[in-house]
Image 1 (tube, rainbow, N blue to C red):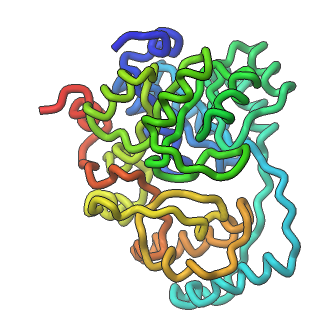
Image 2: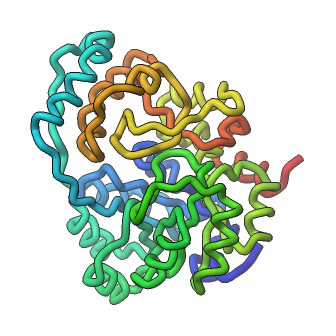
Amino acid sequence: MDNQITTLLAIKYPIIQAPMAGVTTPEFVTAAAEAGMLGSIGAGYLTAEDTRQFIREVKERTEKPFAVNLFVPENVKMDQPYLREAYEALQPIGKHLGMPFWKAPLSEPEFDEQIRVVVEEGVKICSFTFGLPDEKTVRLLKEHDVYLIGTATTVEEAKLAEQAGMDAIVAQGSEAGGHRGSFSGELTFIPLYELLTAIVASVQIPVIAAGGIANREGMDRALAAGAQAVQIGTALLAAEESGAHSVYKQAVLEADEGCTVFTKAFSGKTARGIRNQFILQMKEAIIAPYPYQNDLTKEIRKAAAQQGKRDFLSLWAGESVHLSKKGTIKEILTQLIHPL
């Protein structure tokens, strides 16, 4: 399993733990790194100081390499009347959860500050979702020998990532759980192997396959199609070290094939998750764009978790969620590498 990626990233297996923001914990990232894959801190929702603390906690637990994943901020203008309508659309669900007058403070991205933290803390691998860092940021990171990984859902995005100075690209197929990493052109949903083949033929840098890979067969197929590594997320969601809520883990383990759908209801950005009442109830509702909708629903998701109500949680998961298993990260990885 040795190749260009495993050598460059100093990892045993060509496998990257998906940087699932809100799910990854220091224990989770450490376990992934110690098991032989590239651990990834999902720092998209963290403040700069929380990112720093997270990095330091991982460093205390392992000397293995790991990555930090950041959300590239978008310039989204939102008028107050529309935001108010989106807020009103959530009121019935809030009342159902016993929180009719919750506040929804809007967060400000700290991307530039997080970049500074990555440099100051000596992190050597940084990946990006929802866009690409600007030339100044790329130059700064390169000056500090940081390996850069972009995310692409189309060939056009992959070419843009290569031109921007990324060292590798995650090809995110339509089967992938969580948010689409799309950032250029119309939102598209291209199956992984179609996308992977096209991107490998179009760029010179290493390509990492992501989307629906949950067993050895899927990994071997991706590597045979030209991927230098695979990125897995859903398969690790129910791991003992995962920071996913117990209700979320149970939903993953009980999931049936074909249970996932795309929705904007929770965050304002298209994401794949397990179908539930919240998604169905919000199907015709006014939804604010990301990141505003994400802030509006934050307290709802928190209350739902506290009450153990999976019908109002964002249960992000990929198409292969029905293949998920219990165990430690090491045990799940062993089954992936050496299936019975």
